Image (tube, rainbow, N blue to C red; front, top):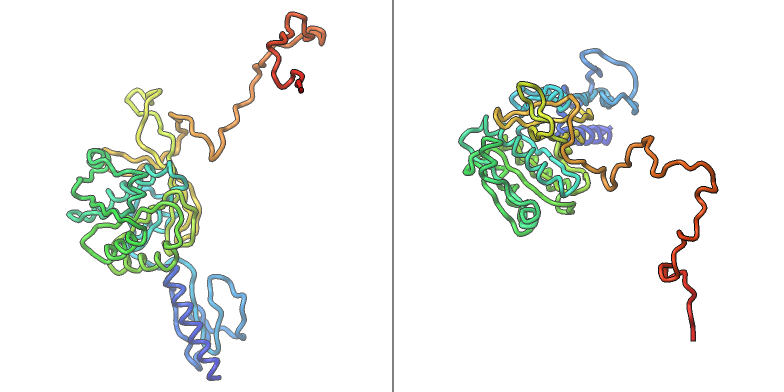
Length: 355
């Protein structure tokens, strides 16, 4: 019996720790009390301990019961950064968590500008609420050399961010960048911290991301992890958004869409991981005048043909033939004038002389 009580306490502690890591706080999490009736939602339940219960309820242990609802934690609306897109915020369970680590992933190096633009859009929304505080952007010399720095005039014109509101920290190695990010994430002097890395590294494992997530929760500030050209790997971030460039729509005028024009910048956002585990794909446009997102649902016009991942798309089939049809097989027989001369024949078909 003593061993059984120790085992119950150990299982309870592990479940509590897992719930904290996953960010799914239980609606009701009670330690088993010896001699108390087993209850679920206030109702006594008979039966023995068994496994294989539904995913919404933890299995009873001993004479008590540990109830772990795998639903969403009850949080106030102020705990999330609302993107302004109702469908996206609903799919994310309220929006991006403010006091957490959020991952923004670009699948290829050419998506670096798109990922940076999406991060600056989020930073613009954050600075509306945290006025007077700067944003710290951390990266290695390699990533800044490959992707470059944001343009100061573009920051103000497109996102409403003053140049002095965006601070950069260039580290020689990824290990140094992670150390800077951990120290900056615990500070309340920044409105947000952005860590940009390139590729996949063994240094960015679950342990490193858990530290960043814990520091963000303690300081109540968001930490954005920008990943360029890396495979999706397990991290402690509750939210992972996969961002790529979307074709720009035509510019709207009073007379309607202006043909051949380039409209607002657009992003294709896929939910790779979230608190709700709901997948979804959204096409968002950034309004540089109002500094807000808008969802685009109508068909867009591609200004530049975008090839598929790795290969170009096959041309559409049509009724136009490369050669006109012939009346009979005799019409395609070659004539003497069509035969190439000896000098025009390929070298590999001429006889090879030896000796």
